Image (cartoon, rainbow, N blue to C red; front, top):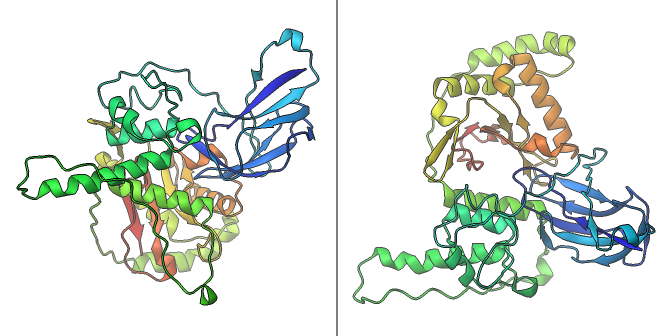
Length: 394
């Protein structure tokens, strides 16, 4: 008998981990090739993970609810193939499917040696492998390395953080908790102090349950998407200094135009004409005029994008109760108004029924969110990292 490893698939270039939602098989069950074994979730999409080979599921290495780094072995299947040609376990890439689609997951890059002393940068940290050379020989997942790179945490500092994962593994929560406590510990240093001694590092803050009346309250477990949205929004506020500028535009002419043309537009193109394509078209013209808004920051480098991939925030559920997702119109600057309208309609429709592909929710250079649909006239949207600006309309 030969064993084949199943690994956490990579759902996109910016996805560093996935959460196991549900195992459909248990140890000892026989599985067919391409049969769905488990469901996973990322901050972008949910997906089914099929069996890579026919055989018996002999090992499940993570339980439901666990966050697993991309490329980590999550299960093993014992096949009927002869072990003579494969004396050790082999690893096969997993194909995942979001509903009916099954894009092939890319293999993780090979390990690179990362210098121990300087802070991690995009050049040495982002592409680092899950296991890095260190005195402790600790396991560092790609998502941990990405946070360390963004926050300027060097390897010596990283090794001092206590891990709560399996075998002392450093988890994303460990690093985020460390950053929060470090910020709290450093805050008093801003004010004058009578002591020459540095302030001691604050211990981790334990979770203190809030008080409420159980007989008149309902406890609702936060779903995976909402937790990840919260984490990303907090991280974005910590990464970028947010400054909000408000301008008023008279769109009376636009309202009249849409009202006058929407019937003919729908008859000709088969879709409704809304204000969103006009807002996107205007934003694209502005980005061409002011290209330094269409950039990303990588350490002390400014990455000027000479293309415009336009993200459009789409709320999920009747009232947005199921979260938010940002599909991306690739090369939007090459489209006319009709092309933009078609793309918005297609992406928004498939977003609401969870049929977007991984590459359709990544690579954005600028984002539009419209809080006017809820009746609000003003909002303060949070930047979609690693972009540097976002447009809100109301």
